[in-house]
Amino acid sequence: MFITNNIDKEKLKEFSTLSIVSGILMAIAGILAIIHPVAGSLAFVIFLGALFIAAGIVQAYTTFKAHQKSAGAWFKVFLLLITGILLLIWPASGIAAVAILFAAYFFIDSFASFQMGLDLKPLKGWWIAVLNGVLSFILGIIMIIGWPFTAPFTVGIIVGVSFFMDGLVLIYLGYLAKKGHYD
Image (tube, rainbow, N blue to C red; front, side):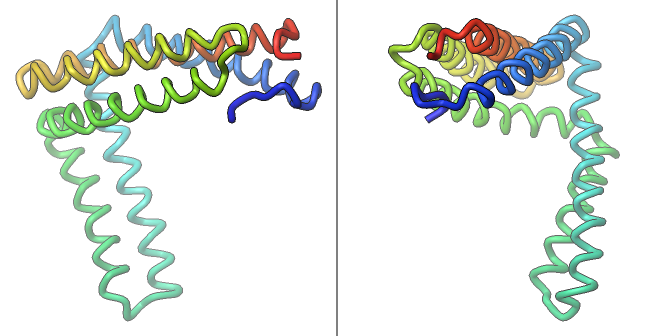
């Protein structure tokens, strides 16, 4: 359960501050992606490619140190590095692939948001998590309908909207926690 009636007051204050700060940062990132969706899409795919390469390097080090003779461990290294390199070489194709992954993400996010709303009910503000779930479900549908032609725009816009909404949820829940509405 996300928040219960038996929560420690200090943890609630800590949650409220972290929730508001991270919510503001997520909302700003969302607004930037909405304003410049193609740039947001490219930035995300390039960042994702860099993360895959970094993970591949870390995995290669770990495999070299602990699993030198494991074909499976070396295959994972190869897969991480190749995926990252391909995303950096062909980011437009990566955007199309990421669009499908994000559609799946939004469907899963909608389920998680619905569950969080049910966990928070009957506490004040439970409905905003459910609203976020509805929005995530709609975004998943939009991603599927326009794919692959609208991917360069929809990835940036939809991720931006999702980040913005997630940021608002965090700000609102942090505000309620700070005001003591979860006592």
